[in-house]
Length: 202
Image (cartoon, one colour):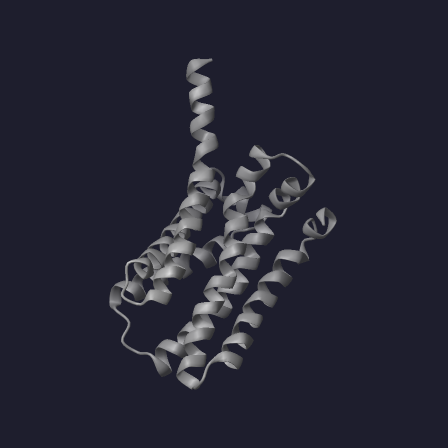
């Protein structure tokens, strides 16, 4: 398993497979074209989320539970980010078809928030090289840290909105994924707080 996770191609293949599988499932399960488009858009977002969480938590997992598997995730953190970018690009295609053809009427706030999220995602993907890291210097970790937190924020707000909506099915999904995202943030921040306490009291 560790050797497989340590391959550069693994996150990209998982991102491609997850996105295409979600689209295929939506097309098969949906009762009509509108339902199929909606399911493809929703399920591609959900299947992309685990890849984002790996990139978001890779450093934390390696610090908290050092071992071969977590070190492999950390070494390939950029590839996990690119795998997420690939899966979320498939989501963008599915979402665009859904919004433009079958379910128009999105609010300008959601379009701006989602557009900024994609702009940040692609900026991070384009700068995920050693060359760009050297060019940007101290701004490279700042850019990628801000991007990760912003994408986390967009995911969390999206699912939190479902958690407090009127649709019972969407409420369940919102609660599950919202809880996972909040737990991921707590896990990412907790070691830093713990280290700060140790530094003060030590």
